[in-house]
Image 1 (cartoon, rainbow, N blue to C red):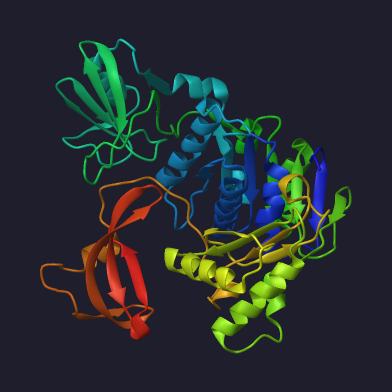
Image 2 (image 1 turned 90 degrees about the horizontal axis):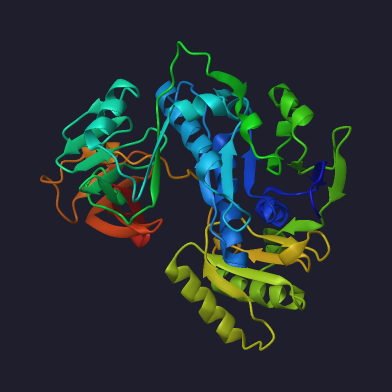
Length: 448
């Protein structure tokens, strides 16, 4: 169903939020995920984006919009704001390349620079442009207030060496290396500030000036910058927050996902027939393997023709075990999609409750139901990369400890140090500290 007004999906447990958000967002270029808790909004963005990738092969760009508080400094919040505005203005987003934004009532209503002021405070460099690096560096220093450093490692810094300019836009997530051949921009390469190694190539970079506290440029709420056809999805009665009143009055496409049947006056209600997948575990065997087999048999009987059935595991080992269990059932008509994915919990949605790909219904099982895992922690979307080592890395002297040494984790207790190992995270290789706990349980902490 196309969201053309203020709608509320009722009777929707939290595990069904990503499916509902996916179903309703597929025709929108920009989708805002609104929650009173930023972590909840980021988790919904991450899980909805996973469904979009799995079911339609589309990768969304995910951004977080923050507001300054005791945890987020003013500069960090301004960097987030300018980064989201840049994505809206220059990202060329479409339903096939959507922008997902996680935010809170405070951040979506915070003041932002007008489009006219933004134009004055932007510098766009494109591949093939003819420029003077020294003129650009002068503008960055004088007009934008960027700091000239020997190495470009933090937002708002630049480094000039011969025919190469490194600049870290405050609206970006990593610095960019501008390489010239003569006076022509030959390449634009984002790079990791920790290693100074390039990671791919881009066609253009937008560089924003920082906020000017003496200016009146921040003169309109952020939500006024959203494209007309944007969709704002709110959870846990967030639209009842008084701060959200301007959204209700000014934005045409709002969708509330509510666990109860209560709906505010003026909202069109739609009941979603669904239930948490963990309800299928009632009466199952206490033996985890046997319970999983019984669960899969029950799911096979529930899954009708054209109904989407997803079995997900957090790790490769989990997915391989699921594949083996499904194969052992020897049920020719049971053909679920088995894949790696992190979801808070599974859900069963009846046919006809949603539209599009999920119109015939959905069965989603996760690590929580299949392996008895605890609920996953709230997600945190990628932020800016810097050369500052993570606190865990600064706290340990790796010259003094070796593989097998005992350590004490602040919340998990005694463990053994198992070295520093590389793992892939969001398409790039990063170093992690590997810790081993009782029963061979492994925990990997990012070093950077």
